[in-house]
Length: 624
Image (cartoon, rainbow, N blue to C red; front, side, top):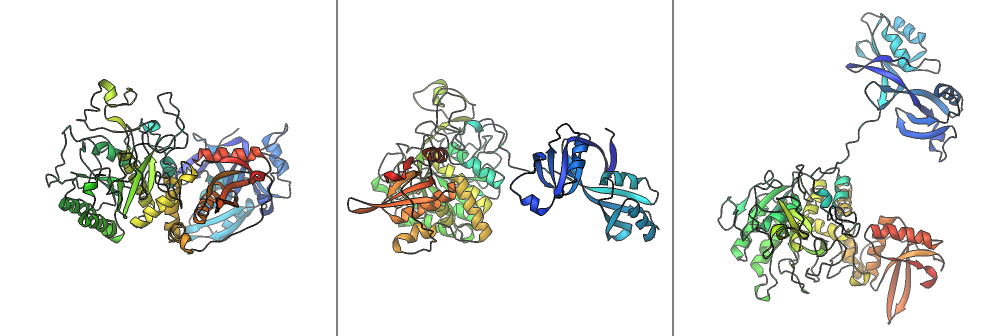
């Protein structure tokens, strides 16, 4: 076909007509119809310049012939050709409006004569001889009209209004080469370079959170990591350090190179390793890094470390150390130092403080983690199971993926000698397979804790006004219940806390609070149900004893039923069925998701739930 050349903005476009696409503008009633007209083959783009871009069922006709026929339908207000600019694969449609500038001195009568010649209607006069006009049913194609007007001596230029599909600047995954190995961020059910099966979905949902946020977090958030052995020359850490401090030397010169101390480097990397095109990334790769070197049980140094973080702009403080020795529990001075930072940091919103629960396989947690202002982080595995080394206790806030089945990859300090008693690659890699000299396999609650710290940074990236208490509440309220339902009492497990961290759900709640100025949605559930407080809306109807659903557990506490019902209904969009019965003299509430006429539909829902990390089984209502 012949090409058309038109002016558009500051350039000229050479257009060719599409051989398959057309634009249709239909009546509002037709646009709302659930059924597509039988002459449309495929809808390609919805509402571009007021037109739906479609392909037609030509049945042997040319596109021109079929478009002429479609234009005769009562519901079709306008049908137009679609174009492509030379060198572009982006469809383009004329909206029907034209911007025309006449030469100086051209009278309004002569302007109107030019419009009449092409059956254009005047929309409005603008300054400096500009007018906005629109084609009518009698007008030629707007591009042809503009081309013809440009040839008139009285016209300075004529430009048709065009619309195209614009780029959506969606989040792009970090290009770092080891990201596919980082199953704790997104678990696809396998390890990237070995034949080892993981449980799909057993991860912290960090990649989902990045997509929701549209980025990997903000550089306005600072994570302080208190530890020993920071390699500040590491490629994932070196360009993001702010206000480093060494407690032992009382200077900004952080201890490096001592083979006894290497722990801080991998911990920091799990939280905030930079996206630089190589290696790994942290959960919040854009966050700033405040390294505080020199852990200590000393009252004075404990006061100093938390005071330093709070006064120097740390938003989050991650600590993968502590003690479970009963001779060294926290006294009031240490408790006060932590409480002060948690309440007064961030200009009164409070520093978010995280401690690992410890790796001792004990039924009580690290004494620092037991502090009420701390987020106490336990570890779970790539199979969504409790990591056997992870300490347990009523103070556990949340758990996060770490080793215990398959380890994660973290940064390694240049002076790290690896595991004693091993040689070669076995010193650094669980399977002996190297993945770069700057990295190693890592795990423990030392790894799960900075992972949650990175998630906290994503929440503050979306909503910097959250208080420390609100962040803790959000993490707990949006966590995924893993393990067996009967391991939870009032929504809490001594192994898993309130569940495995779900960065995406937590971020969604942080955004909701930002946009609505609301209080955390689950706070009244977590704290008020057992005391008869809180306000809930019910819609109750009798469920016939027939059909199928997915039972997720049985609960003695009604508050836990409410918590589970709200989360499950929000997550899966299905009704929640509750069976009330007696067992051993106690009232038992069996919670079932969905109500389907056959088992196959229930099993399909079960697959969705299992993929999301929710355990259950298909249940016939007759058996309840």
